[in-house]
Length: 153
Image 1 (cartoon, rainbow, N blue to C red):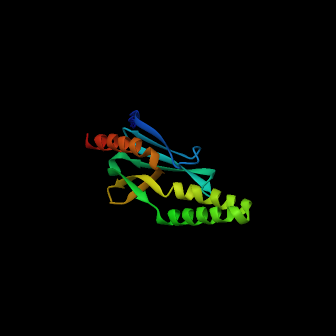
Image 2 (spheres, rainbow, N blue to C red):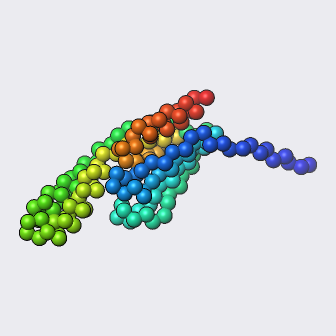
């Protein structure tokens, strides 16, 4: 007896590329919704700046219960950014090079303390966050709406 292999094609319903960071445009997340699964790619980074590989995740659409978008404030990033920027501004008068370095460290942390999230909930209740720049919030919201509409169908 021969087993017949059921071939079904996978079609892309929606795909989005989102900046992970306000300052570093080369860091991007790609999220793809197909008729079978939801998959996304994030950059792994060194010091939050240098891309060093990718993280790929896939969830079968039958295992996704919902997606939700939200915003998140990171108090640690805010505090580190504020401390480094203030120290850099103060240090500009006594040691301009050290002051500039502190500012260059603090500004990215400060500007990325507020982010947008797409939380993908699976059937067991676990939520997997995909974090992107706050400037991508509207695009992320639209993508989340398409995913939820697809789940309803």
